[in-house]
Image (cartoon, rainbow, N blue to C red):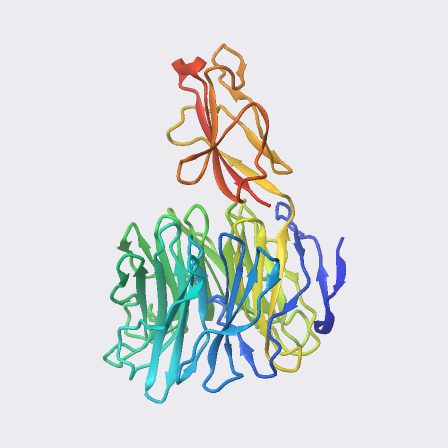
Length: 502
């Protein structure tokens, strides 16, 4: 059953169970207004992302703020240790207007920010980094490789998991001053910024860039353009796989498709690429939100995750959690005049939930929503709207119901299933090892071994049959490995992946 919560000056928020079978239900907190200055505060475009979460659960939000001239980049952080939002702070003091930023966190908790600066002489791409070890923001760095006399705009930033590497993608004019192209530049902890490369290839203009990084170091960059010679802007993607750039691929391959807009890209834990965008077809008079996946076998069919209801659906953002669920937000007129915030979830079987309306604005429109997932079970959404009388930044957190999950499947190095594991209220229960080799079921005993490993393969706990208290462990991904020496003749060993959450 749904329930209605009062959320102060914004209005009412309807919270209801997801209608699609298999999708996890989300409990939503009260919406928080992060900015209160009477000037305008504007989040980055949905593909840029304006919210990031580090491994400790701290939430980082950045936006374009117009309280000063020239405009600057401002920032606010939720401190997980004290469960409080820290005060707003300005991050830049540039002598020209700063425009919408993108933000991301690396595996060490460092925060990476990118934005562009505009002036009468041109624009440039800038970056800034927060060092989690020293708790200081480093100096602004101009990173684009082109001359500042040509526009470079709206960067998107992504951190490569477990490496410290950072990728920034944007669009702008090359030094020749011809069509806007898509560029990418990477930062490495040991060597700093490398040279920028041009990702797009066609001699047409490009726009609206988003970048994501996978767990194996792969990259994916998406944009809109007329690269294929189509009369309408379409969504294109170029991937770097095993350090080799692949060809440009058409994503929005929609029959009777008209212009498409605002792509956003993310990787799931299996390193498949997920792209969302919005557009229109000749069969419908309203924008829809679409989704498509690129796995090892190629591109999937295209899903219309917003449905074909008779009102506008725009500006989607997507993030995938550690269990493989994907979460999308976008803005929708939802049958009224004001654009509302809408959420949809793709479960691990590939089914999208019925869209859920998360706001009830009577004035102003939800704009530029973006989403991030944390290492636990949290979903974090930011956007801006003018429901307070001027554009302000808002934040909403959702918690997926259920405290833990376990995924178990045979490893390529394992001959047969042996162990089962589950977690009940953060107590890991190790089940039976099933040999099926005329010796009956086996449980860990003398000479047998079961252990809990971290993602680097290091042992963090010896396990035994029955219950094992894991409350002292940090939330994250772990592996249960068990083997029986008594059954060495059949090499009975199994690894199960366990997700420990708060």
